[in-house]
Length: 173
Image (cartoon, one colour):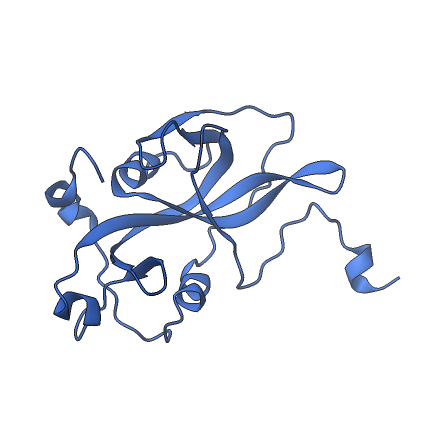
């Protein structure tokens, strides 16, 4: 038996890769926030068909006058089916800015997130399960996000600080 086979499959694995999860559809996404909310200004990249972060200086998307909007990211534990059981696994949650503000004070709570329409408001509800999420320290989401965005780890991104949140808080984000 190798060390990997002897490992408890329910134990959290601390590494640098974390899947990025988004709230899609009316089926509840069960999570437990375990880290702070980070909000960056993001552009929609038509070529890659995805969002990319705004770079502090020399941003090619800003140079082309492309719109940007804030998106929030946070470390969470995601309740997912694995083999024949359900497990809490670490992941990174991407949500609209207004949802990020709401989630900022909900660390450690079991929540269910869903959307009734594709770009609609994220609905936050309570989620209950017999399996409690394991106690883990908040993990650094930056290495996984920089790898996802194909950016060097020393890139200067436009982080939106909490004092600026009220300026960007809009009805539809």
